[in-house]
Image 1 (cartoon, helix red, strand yellow):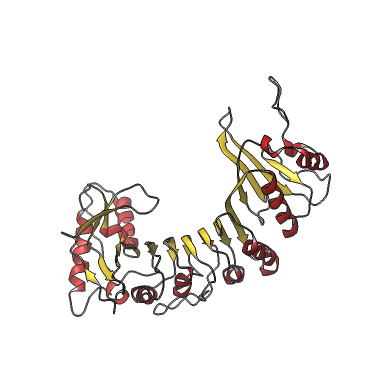
Image 2 (cartoon, rainbow, N blue to C red):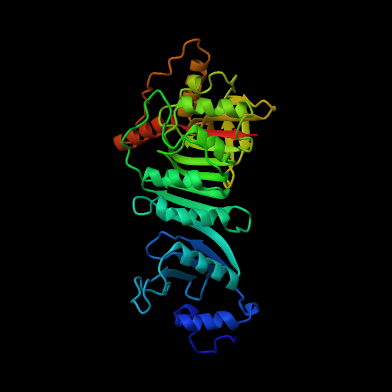
Length: 387
């Protein structure tokens, strides 16, 4: 196979007839394929199911991408036209999807990227089952799924996936768009999807509403957890932290960042954990979160010691953390002072809501409202670092 002659435009292999492609695949020398591909898989996406990209741009500053989509009948007009889309004249089934993935893997030098699953009413457990079985049995290069992104639009489909997935995952993101019908009670935990899973995750991110509960947290045994929403309560976190402290679960844990569904009440969350409140005026540490080059100063927080002597610090992301070499703002000092005062009282007053007073010297009414909202939300957000 030779390179394209000068002053002539090459023809994409995927534009050739299917039988011609097969003939080329059967006779070429694999040493002639010079570029490795990153392969993303989206078996339930309507526009395309497999995406190949080189990761570099051409002379027009465009990344070289090939998006393959199944077309049921030979000769059918392309459903999605454009330079990036190429039809594969096969029925969109798990059998054909697996065949094409294996075929491309054999032909090209492929590194797997993200496996995206958009699941919901149309993609129920019956349709998902063969794909989940394939994920469990497939020979992933690292022994686990490199990156799994789940977009869930109904609870039964998500439950099925979490219950039946058996292969560990390097990075997993779950976003839920599920209508709430029976919200958890204010005093208890989240009753939904609370059963343990049969796989572990290294990095877990996304939206923890509707599915994430303490038993799920413990069984996933994540190294890092970073959520922008959750249904966890103070009592849920107390249960999780007790298990961690006793060495019964989550020994790999290094980082947590998430909001509770309610305002943090440290006395409730840390009850029975022998937590030690660090003085925010004198106790400081410099550190980085994983995959974040920003250096942070940690002021205060609560230390919890695990049974094996390992120490974790937990606190408010907004109030206990500042950028390196930055002064601690007055509202953070006031909140840390309030937390210290409440913690050291025999009967705390932190059950009452706090009204933030915003000085309007530099801010109009809209800015003041935003700052009040930000500080109120900041009392829901927590972080935890295991040293």
